[in-house]
Length: 146
Image (cartoon, rainbow, N blue to C red):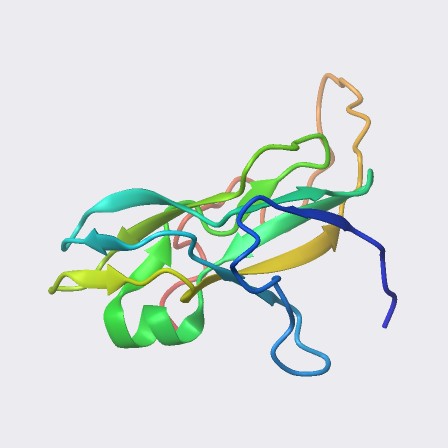
């Protein structure tokens, strides 16, 4: 597995540094820097107290933690949430409560995962028509239910 070096600035030095829970995990845990209560259907940006210098050619994808999603309906509104290499501000997590009950986020709680991904830069070439494929223009639901 390839490693990249990423600089991190801990704005809130009392919180744990984001880290992988187990060897080989794809995502590292990101912690809440604040206490917050999310009512059912509510969206909040939750502070994490960290900033990253993401290397050019990479992004961070912020993803929900599976336990919070499965047990409480807590997710990220635009998952995966992309943090671009040029961004140097605080990482805030846009969280939504899809559950039926309020959920209390506690300072220091693991609230999301950060996955570092390589990014391919596309060069668009404008054409007058595209090549034909078997699928063609068939879109949503075109392959049926089963």
